[in-house]
Amino acid sequence: MIIAYSTAPNETIANEIAHYLINEKLAACVNLIPQVKSIYHWDNKIIEDNEVLMMIKSEKSKQQNLIDTLVEIHPYETPEVIIIPIENGFKGYLNWIHTSLN
Image 1 (tube, rainbow, N blue to C red):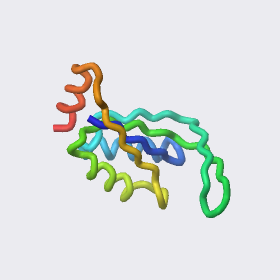
Image 2: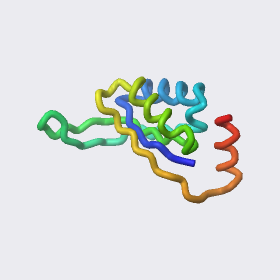
Image 3: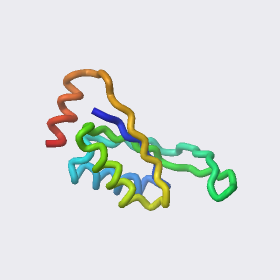
């Protein structure tokens, strides 16, 4: 199992991405965490943006397809896509992720 993190410029776009990933069975669940302040370098400037953080639960076998899909459908030129393995957790929930994606 994995958790992928990505950000979106607003809740509407984050919601659209979440629904797409779930419909395509690339994600079992996507948590949308609004009002995240992101501060970063872009084009030699320091940028501050309000974004929505997406916490995407999926399986390792879908990892590359998930990354490729996010890059393809995301409105950002260089979207954040970070994958973190789930090493342990409540087996019932982890089983639910697995069955949701099949």
